[in-house]
Image 1 (cartoon, rainbow, N blue to C red):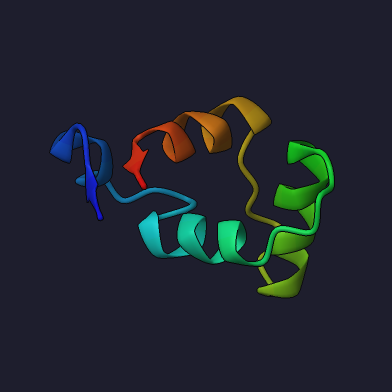
Image 2 (tube, one colour):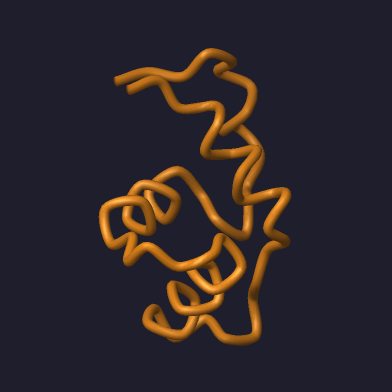
Length: 64
């Protein structure tokens, strides 16, 4: 698995590559907003969150 644009993951992000992958693997069929909210609650990072647009944009950078 790789990324289309290697620069997409160089900056320190609120939801780094590992978190994006873990959220995808734990997907429960909810809306993107609810998936992100539940992921951050499960990881104990309730005060840190990302927008639905940012989450979906980072998912698009993955190649499956």
